Image 1 (cartoon, rainbow, N blue to C red):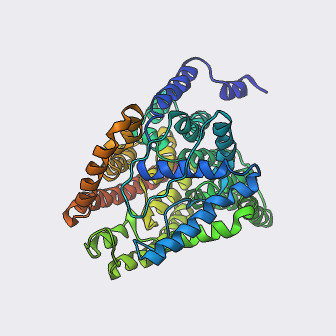
Image 2 (image 1 turned 90 degrees about the horizontal axis):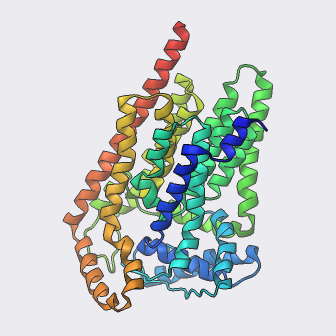
Image 3 (image 1 turned 60 degrees about the vertical axis):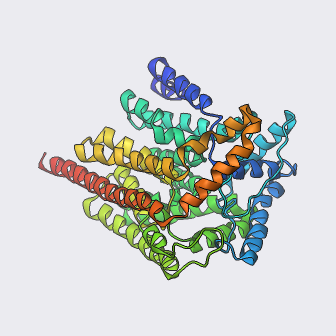
Length: 461
C-alpha cells in the first residue's frame, strides 16, 4: 500500500489530534440521552440480551412493537402503532454483542414501556449509555476518515467534528452509522466502483431508510460514463440495483415480516417534524393529547407525504440529468429532495445532508452554499432544543446523581406536557419547519448553480 493510503487509514499529526479530541468530547457527552428514544434503546438492549442466538434475538423488538401496537390501537390512543423499534435491522446486529457485553459486565436492564403518548424521563446507567452511544462515536470517526479521503480540509473537518447538531445526534440516535455508509458509497462511486457503492447504500438503507434516496445518483453516474458502450452501462445499472437490493434483503431476511410491519407503520404516520405535511398535522384538531381522534387534516398529511416524496425525488433526478451534476452534488440533491418530500423529518435526518453539504462546500464554495449549510444544522438544532426539549437530555444523568429527584421531575413533566398540548405552543415548530424547507430549496439552488458554473468553465476552456 502507498504512503498516501496508509496516511488515510492511520491518522497522523493534526488529524490524529482531531480524531482523539472528537472522541474525547463525545465521551464527555455520554451521560446525555433523549427521553423517549433513550428508553427505546435500553429496552432493545434488554430484549437482545435475553437470547444467545442473534437471529432470534433481533426478532424480539419487532414482535414487541407489534404487540404494543395492538394494545395501543385497542385503547384508541394516539394512533394504531406504538413507537418502538421502527427501523431496519442492521443496528440490531450491532447492538446484540454490546447488549451481551453489558450483561457480561454485570449490568441489568429491566424493560419499561410507557403508555403512549407520554413525556418520560428514564434513569439509565452510565455503562449502558456508553455502549448505546459507542456505534455512533465509532461511525463519526469513520466519517472523518472518509471526509478526509474525499478531500475535505482540516478546517471543515474540525467544523463538522464539533458541530452542535452532529454532537446532539450522537447522544440521541444512530444516524451517524447510516451517514458513514452514505459517504462510503460516495467515495466508491467517485472511484468508479459502482457495485461497492451500491452495496454501501444497501447497508445504509438497512440501518435507516434515508440512504436509499442516493441510489439514483449511482445509477445515473453509471449511465453518464461515456467511456463504455451503452449495453455495458445498462447491465451495470441492473447489477448495481440488484447488489443494493440483495444487501438489504440479506440483512432483513431473518426479520422480513418485522421490516414489512415497520414500513407499514412509516407509511401511515402523520406528518411531523420539519416537513411540510406537518403543517397539516398542526392544523388538525387542537384537542387534548391524552385521548383524541385525529381530524381530516392529520390524515391529509399522510396523503400529502405520499405524493410529495416521489415528486421531489423525480425532480431531483431530472435536475441531475439536465445539469449533469457531479456525484457529490447528485448525492446531496437527492438527500435534500428526500427531506423536502418526506412527511416526517425528524431532527437527526438532517445529519446526512449536513455531511454531504460539508463535502460540497469544500469543493465548490459559495456564499449560498455556506448559508444553506448553516441552515441545515441551525434549524434542526433549534427545533430539537424546543421539541425534546434541551433540558430533557440531562434528566437521566440528573437522576443518576440525585435519585430522590424523581417525584419532582414527575410534577415538572406533567406541567410541561400540558403546555405542549396548547395550540399556540405549536407555532414556533411551524415557523422552524417553513424556514428549514426554505433552506433546503436555497441549498439545492446553490448546488445546481455552483455545478452549472463549473460546467460552463470546463466547456469554455
